[in-house]
Image 1 (cartoon, rainbow, N blue to C red):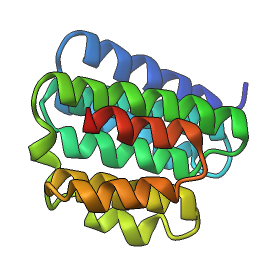
Image 2 (cartoon, one colour):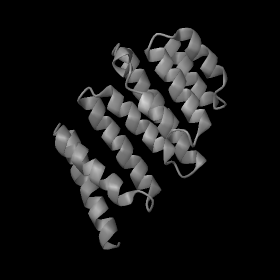
Image 3 (cartoon, rainbow, N blue to C red):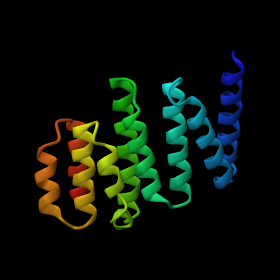
Amino acid sequence: MTRREEIIATLLKEAQRALNERKIEIAKKKFDEVMHISKGSYPWIYFEACFGLVDAFIEEGNYSGAVKCSIRALLDASDEEMFSLGVERLKNVLAIIKKNNKIELLKNRLEVLISQTSANKDLQTFVMALDALTKGNLKEAQLLTRNIRSEKLKEIVESLME
């Protein structure tokens, strides 16, 4: 194992331990460090660190942070398998938010993602539909959802409209 890999492994262990002990700020800092060190070189580690940060955001009730970080993980997914797993995780995050009746907390918090997702039109359309939904624009969300090619992303928006 290289020195860099050792640092990443140590940080991941510390981040997970902090999260388990409900030391959310420490966990977030450690996951963020792992993301910074692994981005571009270790796509699966970056991906897992993103979703570790998502878990920390959910623990503290920062649902918009959880969604934004999930989208970030999807944008950097290096292959279809990773993207598909990320979509499933995003689906779970949004299900938690819906179950807790907190969808309204995403209102006016997703616009920044529209420009950030421009490299992936399907993901961008998904974000636009989600943004419309959080603002109560059901008709617009339905129209946008029709343009999403990914059935999994489409199903997420549809499940939130139920």
